[in-house]
Length: 352
Image 1 (cartoon, one colour):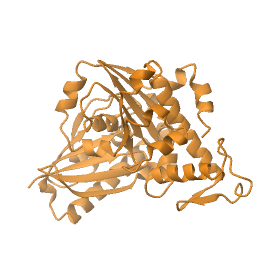
Image 2: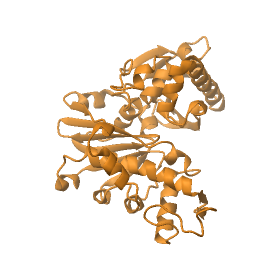
Image 3: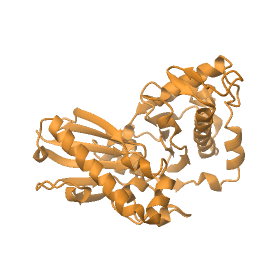
């Protein structure tokens, strides 16, 4: 039996899945991305790389991957010779750091990556020292801020002509497919969704919705005087005023991205869109509570579903169908911060 190892290198976490020839996942694990010590968001890490830290950051990431792979092989009771390929999906910044690419142009407009194409490398280049060489496939991306994690995620979706795909992480990447056109964008949500709660970030959404209903905080996110200094515990999560503000900034970035990305679509057409919400929200996302908090618009109510970590799932799938689906599509990237309505919308979307 031969195996495929899929790796999703997220900004906050790295997730792994080992699958057999029948595409059955036989082992799955995750760990914190060790690059968190260089910054919690991609822009900070880009700046650190440009300050002369790129080599050590690249080695740190490779060391983590090689150590984790050794553990996975050992605990799965297989040998490295049983692994036919390693498939990696990651945002463009993580790929640049992994591959030791110059990050300077990622941090300034027009945000030009070294490249975003698919690439196959030898396993020795990610720190594996075994004599056996394994093909390591780096998933292609779209742009500086819509990377291979999104491309990998799209492989898991039905090839329909009209949908909105949102991957909720440190960067909230969005893909709107309508007819023969694809619009892509990225909203800088920060790490709030992935650090707000231990476990599923969806727990934090439900907790905040409860707090709003109980008048523990008002629609501006301000805690009642009784809890302003001490904070408030809801669903085993402690909310300080700062944690609430961090969440508001993250959810406002997401909502503003959705509003601006879909601004040209007729309201009646929005009701027919399939909406897929990916990321570490898992499968328990309460769409109604997301709408209650203003993170999603009301037209998400009946046609949005949470689909989990599609980036990791996609590393175990073939790319042929997606390549064919994208072949006749025109792709346009939207830079949210350059749009005249961005600042006004972002501020208004802060409220719950």
